[in-house]
Amino acid sequence: MSEFFSMGGYGSFIWAAFGLSAVVLIGLFVQSQRFLKTSEAELSALQDREADNGA
Amino acid sequence: MFNYFANPTRFLRLTSKLQPLAMVVALICLGTGLFYALFKSPPDYQQSETVRMMYVHVPAAWMAMFCYVTLACASAVALIWRHMVADIVAKSTAPIGACFTFLALATGSLWGKPMWGTWWVWDARLTSVLILFFLYLGYMVLYNAFDEPTRGARAAAILSIVGVINVPIIKFSVEWWNTLHQPASVIKMDGLAIHPSMLTPLLLMAVGYTAFYFWVLFIRTRAELNANKVRVLRIRQAEG
Image 1 (tube, rainbow over the protein chains, first blue to last red):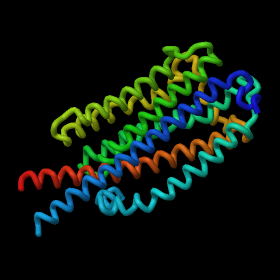
Image 2 (cartoon, chains in turn purple, brown; image 1 turned 180 degrees about the horizontal axis):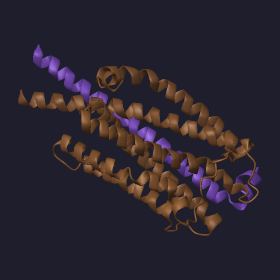
Image 3 (tube, rainbow over the protein chains, first blue to last red; image 1 turned 135 degrees about the vertical axis):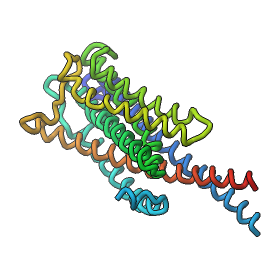
Image 4 (cartoon, rainbow over the protein chains, first blue to last red; image 1 turned 90 degrees about the vertical axis):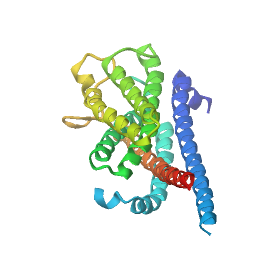
């Protein structure tokens, strides 16, 4: 097990590369998903107001 | 085809259908790809275990260029035919491409330290990819630099089209100049130059990264379309 994590002595470089890739891609996904949610909320709030004004 | 999907409603309908598909492909390919990359694939005879960096470095570098070509093409369509959807695809691609470029640079640096003995060297390949990263950042800054969004979009589109000259420079930098970075070694003129045991995880990760790009692209384009509608409604309500 520890042999697997040490990766022939290069573990710190290899895990840093894989870890950084995971963090950046997951971060990008989360930020995009939040952007979608806030844009949907803003749009529906404005559309409600528009409907109220029309009534 | 461009005309057909230039209609935002049709585009929205298509992307909401494709989004779950991209998600499934991305998760399956990245999951199995990581398993092969970390457990199944053998160490390299020269680079030993560090060759595993290839499975996150190479797909990120491929996607960095793929996204840039997409950005430039979408920008050209947006500029010439004034297609709103093309502009939104370009705008949404830029941050994704910037992330992939950053990862190509950072994982390359982490690979360079144990194999070359240095984090960074100003060779043609590394420098041209750094310029690619700055092109993405420049595009995003320029896009948001104007009060009137359409002016920013036009300026950024022109920048991205001019910057496309950098893509062949990146590709051929390892042949035109003497670089520390190795030349292309997956596919050579005489065919595949990589053993299936390493090609399998590499291809899985590459397909996974591509599907991930489309997955996030569809999320971002939907968000941008909403944001456009918000802008229009705000103006209309302000005018009363």
